[in-house]
Image 1: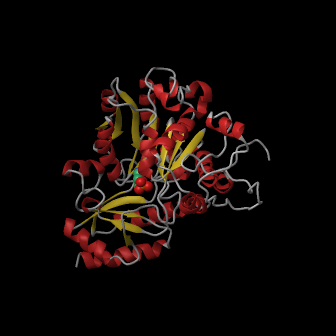
Image 2: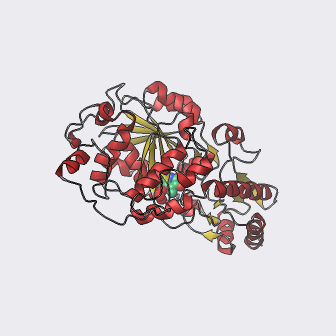
Image 3: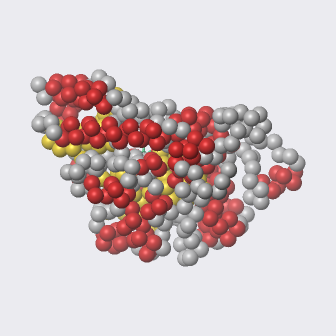
Amino acid sequence: MSDSPQHFDTLQIHGGAAPDPATGARQVPIYQSTAFVFQDADHAARLFNLQEVGYIYSRLTNPTVAALAERITHLEGGAGGICCSSGHAAQIMALFPLMMPGCNVVASTRLYGGTYTQLTQTIKRFGWSAKLVDFDDLDAVKAAIDDDTRAIFCESIANPGGYITDLDAIAKVADDAGIPLIVDNTSASPYLCKPIDHGATLVVHSTTKYLTGNGTVTGGAVVDSGKFNWSASDKFPSLSQPEPAYHGLTFHEVLGPMAFTFHSIAVGLRDLGMTMNPQGAHYTLMGIETLSLRMRKHVDNAVKVAKWLEADDRIESVTYAGLESSPYYDRVAKVCPNGAGALFTFAIKGGYENCVKLINSVELFSHVANLGDARSLIIHSASTTHRQLTDEQREAAGALPNVVRVSIGIEDADDIIADLDQALTKALA
Ligand SMILES: *Cc1c(COP(=O)(O)O)cnc(C)c1O
């Protein structure tokens, strides 16, 4: 094959996977095996010393999971990547090599509800903390960075408020401060947005969502651009100094652009154990083959449904960046040129009560705490995913009480609209 880089539609099918060398199996086999036999004692030693890449034990690496990690890495344009057990695991795995007790991450206020809680509450147990600021206020982002800041964290398309982050501007702030930018690209998928092209160092995913696309398994991924110089300061000793947790190996010096990836496998997955299983990887490999086809249809449908809602007088507002009325419409062409995603919120007349009636009246839509399924999904964020938050935090996250969130599926747009129409009639009766 030629050296010119392959295109997205090709990589989503072929990336990371050749016919199985042992059997010729054309599809990636499910290597349902905990351990892998060493050729001899010398081979085992080389694998443990990271002098040779191979399989030891499935908590660290597994061929089915590795095929998926490589495919997602190709799609994101990164140097290396790992898969793990969920999107939330991916976020911890991304922070783990960077943070020490006393360190903080500067994060956007516009986050998935679970991420909000993970960053503001749970990570405190590790001695880490997060400072949440409005990422449209670049001076506030700069001001929040201090000597103990080790990362900046945001979502490309933020869940659920129809917000798009100006990734180039944030990446510049991160760059000037000498710290990596971590972008959660779950709501966009690499088909709509490529954070590394905008200066991100690490991209995290909940593969549970669009990458799998069929609502079957939870999973996560971290992709490293391979471009960050971990040795430029003394801020990242796990990567730039001898790592005591891996017999004093200096990851950045020895492994260069693969330092973060190997650290994540050799220390992160080894000791935190948030591993993806091969069955789970198989479902995601199946789904990812049609990612671009699905995303095009998700976006087409979302635009149609959002426009229909915006024109309906039972609706107060629609926050979808794909609508010209959105304050973030101009960012779409720059940040996610293939579309603003398929996740948005709308406010209906009559507030909280009518939202509940609407949710109870839909038939095609499923009322679930999930997104990125082939099916259309609906949820009332204020009473579910964003329930743990205060009113102010809910407002900042775009999850007000009179608002419902939809994840528009790939059914026929007319049927999606018909379902919302009949449910709105019942809700406002
Ligand atoms: C779902 C989601 C997560 C968490 O992923 P899980 O796979 O559920 O752990 C993180 N970020 C975003 C944007 C999500 O939608």
